[in-house]
Length: 602
Image (cartoon, rainbow, N blue to C red):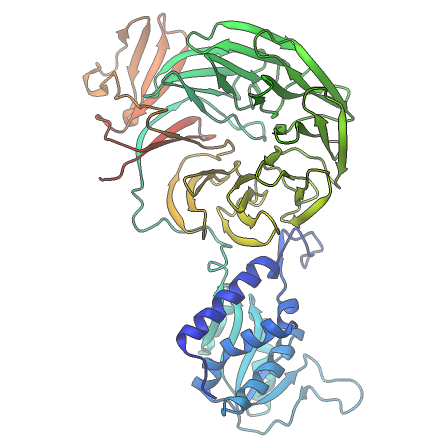
C-alpha cells in the first residue's frame, strides 16, 4: 500500500476539520485546573475512539511516520495510547512498520512495575504523538524517560497545536513539532484582516450615540425617508441625514440605559420602547409625538416587531415586581389589543410566524411562550434551564423557531413546541439568531460567531472575534454574508458559506448593536453639506440655527445656537460619494455611528 496522496490527505483533513469543529470543542463545559468553569474545552477522545475518525486520523499521521521511519511510536496520555495503536497498525499495512510504546508518568506499582509498556530496545528512534499540545510537560516527561533508556525522540506529531508554551519549548530543545490543525485553523483566534480589505469604503462617523455603560444589546439603525433612525443609551432617539449630520432628536425620561430597542419605521412613523417605560410613536419627518403609552415600568431590550397581515405590533415590558408582559398594540393610536403576563421580565424581542398565527415571547422565568397572534391566548410553552433574554427568530420555511437561553443552549423548536435540536455553545447565551437558506447564525458571550445547519444543529463553521469573553452584537445575514460586531470593537463581514473573512474594521469600542445593511436605493448617502476645510478654525461657524466648530482629527462639532449644548459631532472621510451598491451602519460604544459603502471599483 502507498501512503495517501496529497489530494486524499486534504480530503481527510477537511472531514476531520468538520468533526473537530462540530464535536471536538465543548463549549461552556469542563473545569479548569483551578476548579473554575471553563469557557471551552478541547476533547478529541470521542473522535479518536470512533472507528471512522480513528482511520482518518491515523492516515493523516502517516506522512510523518514515512518521513522519520521511527522504530517506535509513543505517547503518555489516554488519547496518545489510542493513537499509538491505530498508527502502529496502519504503519504495518503501508510497509513502514513501527512498534508502539505507552509511557507512564510513574512506574506501575504492581505487576511488572514498568514505566514503559512495549518491548523497547535501546538506541531506538521514537516519534511522540498526542491529541494536542498546549504546555510541554507531557512531551518533556516522555523525552526524559526515553533518554534514560538511551532512546532518541526524533519529532512530535499532534492533531491540535495550541501554538503556546509547548511549541516554544520543543523548538528550544530542537524537537520538530508537526500538527494537523492550530487553534487559528479552527477559528479559535481572531482573524487577521483580509489582504484586500477594501470591500467597504469608510464614508463617515458621527455621534455621540452610545456610551456602553449599561451592559446590554444596543439599538440598531433603520432607514426611511432618506434618513437614519436609532436609539441611544444616553436617552435620545436620533434622526440623521444620510450624510451623518443631525436632523432631530427626541429625549426620553431615562439617560443611563436610555433606548436599547431597535425601532420600526412604517408609513412615516417610528415605533420604539425606552427605559422610562414608554412605548412611543413619532412622526419620522419631525420627531413630533403622535402617541406614547406607558404599559410598564421599563421597556428594556425588547425591540418591537410588526405583523403586516394583522396590522399589529408586539413589544415586551417589565415591572419592578420582577414580572413582565408581552403587549400587542395598534400602531395608529397605541391602543392595546391584548397583553399576556409572564412570571418575570420580558426583555427579549418577540418573534412571529404568520403561517401559524403565532407570536413568541421569551421571559426571564426561563420559559418561551407561544401565543395566538390575534387573541394572546397561550398555545404552548417550553421551559429551559436559564432566563431567555435574546430575541426569538421564526423561520417560515420550516415553521421552526430559534432562540438562546442563559443555560448556554441554542434551541430549535417545531411549530408544536417539540425540540428539534439544541446545541450547547457557551456558559450563557444572550443573542438573537439569524436564519437564511439552510443556516442559522448566532453569537455567544465569548465573542464568537457560529454558523450551524438549521435542520440538524451541526456546527458548520465558527469564528473568534476577540479574546474579550464578552457579549457580541446580534448577527445579520444579507447577500450571503454575515455582518456582525464584536465586543472587541471590530466590525466583521464573513462569507456565509464557509466563514471566510471578507472585510473588517476596528472601531474604538465594543459593538453591541446589530449592524444595518441597506441597498443604495433605500439609503442614498448624500455628500457632506459642510466642508471642514472651509470652516473658520478655532471659531463657531453659523449655519442655520446651529453652530459648527471644527475640532481635531477632522471632527466637526455641532452646538445649539447659544453654544450651551454640544448636540453632535461628525467626520466625513469622503468629499464625494462614489457609486455604491450597499451601505452598512454600525454603532460602537466609542460613541460613534459608522457608515461604510460597498464600492465595486476603487
